[in-house]
Amino acid sequence: MAEYRVVPIDAADTHDLRLRVLRDATPSSDVEWAGDELESTVHLGVCDDSNTIIAISTWLTMPSPDVTVTGAAGLQLRGMATDPSPATRGVGVGALLLRAGIETARERDADHVWANARTTVLGFYTGAGFEIVSDEFMSEATDLPHHRILLHLR
Ligand SMILES: CC(C)(COP(=O)(O)OP(=O)(O)OC[C@H]1O[C@@H](n2cnc3c(N)ncnc32)[C@H](O)[C@@H]1OP(=O)(O)O)[C@@H](O)C(=O)NCCC(=O)NCCS
Image (cartoon, rainbow, N blue to C red; front, side, top):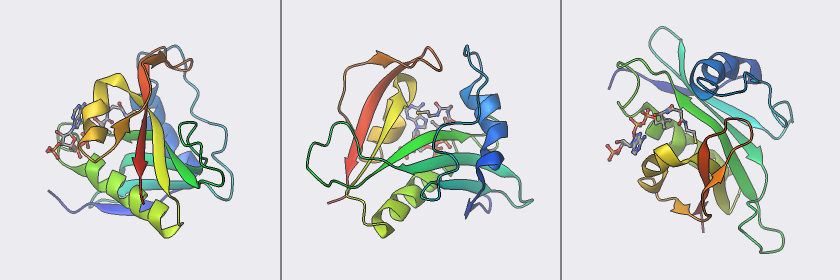
C-alpha cells in the first residue's frame, strides 16, 4: 500500500466524500448530519501522499440500542467511505481507518463500537470482528438496506 496516514479532520472535510460516495444514487444529498459539530464527536480521515483525503469516518459518543447494560459507553461509527477510485478502494484504506477509530474508542474507554451498516458491506465489518445484531431495515436517508452491527471492546 502507498503511504496513507490517519488524521483528525473537520466535519466539513467529510462533505465531499459523503456526497460522492454515501449519497450517490440515494434520495438525499444531505451531508451535514446531527451530532457532527458536538465537541465529543471525532472525524477521522485518511490522507494520501499529496494530503488529499481519500477516506472518511465519524465517531459519535452514543451507546448502541442493542447494549442494555446501564452506563455502557459506546461510540457510533457513521459515514465510513473510501474514495471509489481503483487506486484507493479495496487496498486496505478502509480497514486502516476502521482500526484507528476502534483504537480511539479504546482510548476513550468505550466498551463498544456500533453502526448502522449497509447490507452490501457487512463483510467489511464482520471481517474486523463486528457481529450483526439486528434484522435488516431500510435507512430513511438512503433507502438502502442496513443492519446494526456491534463490536464489544471488553
Ligand atoms: C466499505 C468500504 C468503506 C470499504 O473500504 P475499502 O477501503 O475498500 O476496504 P479495505 O480495502 O480496507 O478492505 C478491508 C477488508 O474488507 C473487505 N471488504 C471491503 N469491502 C467489502 C465489501 N463490500 N463486502 C465484503 N468485504 C469487503 C476486503 O476484502 C478486505 O478483506 P481482507 O482483509 O480479508 O483482505 C468502501 O468499500 C466504501 O466506501 N464503500 C461505499 C460506501 C459504504 O458502503 N460505506 C459503508 C457504509 S456502512
